[in-house]
Image (cartoon, rainbow, N blue to C red; front, side, top):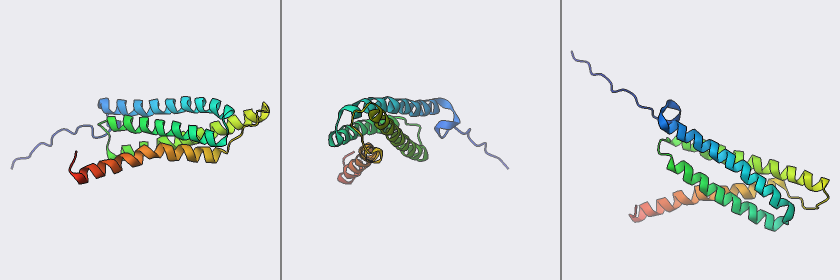
Length: 152
C-alpha cells in the first residue's frame, strides 16, 4: 500500500508568516496613524467652522479616508475574507471613536477659550462614519453591475 505525502502547507493568511502578514499589519498600522493625523487636522478645522460646514468638511475627510483605506486593503492580495471583514469593521470603528474623542476635546478647548464653536460629537462621528463607509458600499455595487453586464 502506497501512502501519499501531503504537500507542505503554505501560509494561508497574513498571521501565519511570509510577507503577506507584514504587509497586512503595516497597512493596518499606517491606516491607524493616518486616522490620528486626520483627526488632528479636523480638530483644528472644527474650531473655525460652523455646524453645517463642519459636517461637510468631516464628511469629505471621511470619504477620502474611506477610499484610501479601501484601496490599501484591496491592494493586499494575501487577505482572506475574514481578514477583510476584521479590517472593514475595526478601522472605521476606531476612526469614528477617534473623531468623537477629538470632537469632544475640541469642544472642551473651545469652551475654555470662549471660542463659541461647539459640535455634537455623535453627529460628527455619524457624518464621518457614513462618508467613510461609502467607498466600501459603492465599489462592490459597481463591481456587481460590471459583472452582470459582462464587463470585467
